[in-house]
Length: 58
Image 1 (tube, rainbow, N blue to C red):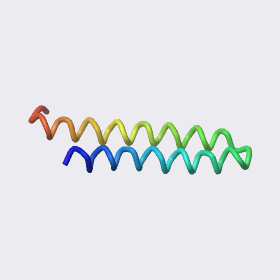
Image 2: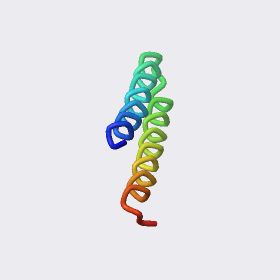
Image 3: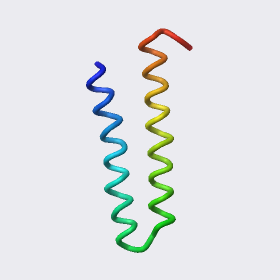
């Protein structure tokens, strides 16, 4: 289960980086920043929820 969650988080971030690079290639730096910040937030939320479920904490 741990490997699957880390893989999910890695994929979330890697896909966002790929999309952000595409934005940057079009000189859309604000769009790139927005994508990366959203990916950071979403991945952190994924980790926090997973960690709470894994350890039984709320």
